[in-house]
Amino acid sequence: MKRTLAFALAATGLAGLFIILHAATDGYDAILEALAIIDLTALGAVLLFGIRQMHETLTGWDGLAELSRAKQAAEAANLAKSRYLASVSHEIRSPLNAIYGYAQLFERGDGANAQEAARVILRCSEHLTNLVEGLLDISQLEFGVLRVRSEEVRLPTFIDQVVAMMRPAAAAKGLDFIYEPSERVPEYVRLDQSRFRQVLINLLSNAIKFTDSGSVTLRTSYSGQIATFEVRDTGPGIAPEDHERIFERFEQGTQAEGARVKPGAGLGLAIARTIVEILGGRLELESDLGAGACFRITMMLSEIAGKVTTSAPARRAVGYEGRQRSIVLCEDDADQRQWLERLLRTLGFDVHAHPNGEAALAAEHAAPDLAILDISMPGISGWEVAQGLRARGSETLKILMLSANSEELHRPDFPTPGHDRFLVKPVEFAHLVETIGDLLGLTWRWDADAEPGADTAPSAPDCETLDASAREHLVHLKEFLRIGYVRGIEAEIRQLEEAAPHAEALVGRLYDCLDRYDLAGMAKLLKES
Image (cartoon, rainbow, N blue to C red; front, side, top):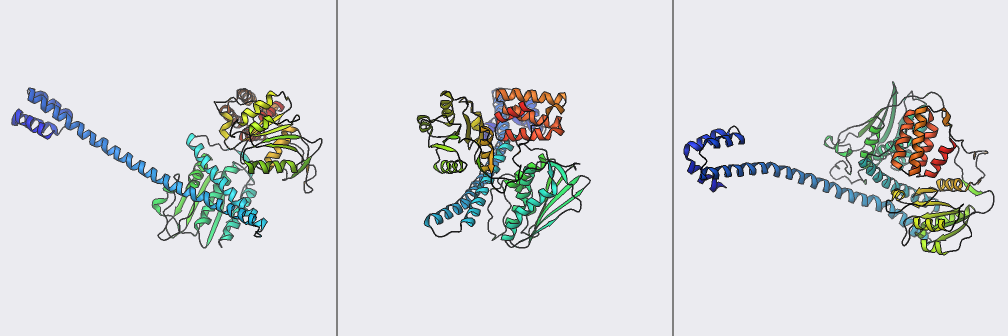
């Protein structure tokens, strides 16, 4: 292009060159106007072509700069992903190694303490579950569907429970755990206690993890309906340049030189800040290297007058009244099948366990009362097994589907047959027992420590107290239930919660049904209300 421009300039003469250079000070459009003054001979046309090429090249430089910035951003994201994958690998392998180690000790008969091993295995399992739930929360945040509830919470008891959970972890590291409650704390507030507990535990866990000596302090204050929660530690502190970065997904603060890298997936703070903001609050950080750290949550918590209904004490079912019920269990994972079969047999059920769908359909069962089916199995799926069992004409058979993937309920490529309940793994014993009892209409026999009369079922909420606009949401709910539109169901429950704040009992039970994907139970609840 230089040779072309030189040839063109020589042909147009000094006058033309002067005109062009003068116009160049006003930009590309002025150059084109100047060229119009010059006699556009063949050589002038060549000059115009060269100028245009120069403009495109200069514009291309800006484009190259943008490409360079995009490349740098992609490389940074790739580096963060690599750090994250390495961190998650460590987070998964560490608890798995502990579980695997104790399992080998038991297998060798080396006299491992069963109670201590059970505590370690339970703690490792909870850690893995929390890691998976954190990843699921991130996925929900990306799609904008992370849901929070508004429920009545007894705040002092709630905080005491969190403190009781975290104090042993601090003591195990030789740290002082200090709780400084506010002189005035409202007895009852409206809050999503599950989500807020997740936030406090994350902040306290981080403080304990990154503090090698000294103390971790939880301080609360309340004034003018504004609550403040502070988590302070005497750890290494966080550099000012990392204050915002550590709230990004998959990121952690820079380690001091020579410091041991702490485990963590870099998800907790990102989720914590988002949850606090959804709850209408603010999560801030005050820290510097060598000065410890203080994470401060500020949010409005309005005090609620009156009392809330207390929940029944935890109980353990040991059997049920009436004739023996028969259950068909279909689960391809041998370990899960064995513990499920053992649990069900200890409760008095007649269990027919099968490793796959073909075996379950080939076996002759004398009118089972319940089928518990895993969905994802080699060969035919749990949905197909359910379809086959239904085809045998059993009108009273109840079907409970199990899956580690909550989206299995909404597969577009396979019509889900008439199942009765859907539970997502991992399943808690108490939840499974409650679901089975509800499906089969059982009257449980409780252990000797159960409170007398504690098995009285709660009455269905009374919907007659709802106004016309709130009842309209119930009509929409029933319609969405009929067609299985889960997102619509969730939206209507949220609108019902806003339209009828006094119907918190009904809204809470609707949310519970939705969390379990128990659409049949939700329909029954609305019918009884």
